[in-house]
Image (cartoon, rainbow, N blue to C red):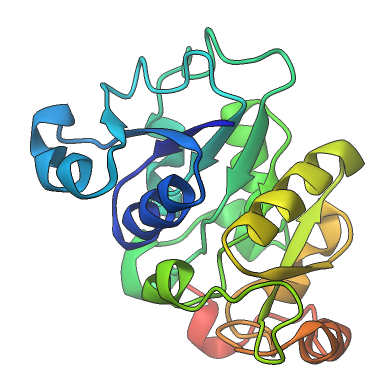
Length: 219
């Protein structure tokens, strides 16, 4: 599968490691240009491209940049991508720590629904609540007693199945977290955020979540 990573920060870098190790073809772009990604290319075999070209031919596009930067992505980001391209959003809204105030999210819109609105594409929310380094180091084989699970939320069942398959490829189980409007259950400040647990543990954490944003995660 051809996977495009839009962003090469901590999450993007570790996704590149995990996906290439699993045999996927990975392209990656960042805001500073492909010439700055030489070390990651040498380590993983991924191909560095300008952001305007990174999604060409991609089956999956992962948007993994600071939430506040999402509206700055090129309008033609998905030009040349597969007609059935699956878009994964790994973002978290950090109003006090990084992003400043985003009024729609403060008013109750889920973080990934806001991202989908900005890019004009449906998204699947995944990889937002795991420590970045664990993406490429904590995966386990199917059936391993210590295999962790991650929540996945989205409105398109086919797209969610693709993401669940990618999780399995890199050593994780998945828990269906419902629709994008229900993805508040895995946002920062909820029990599943940062939780290292199996399917039962993640399922219970999602069920225990409150839609009320806690003080640390409000502007």
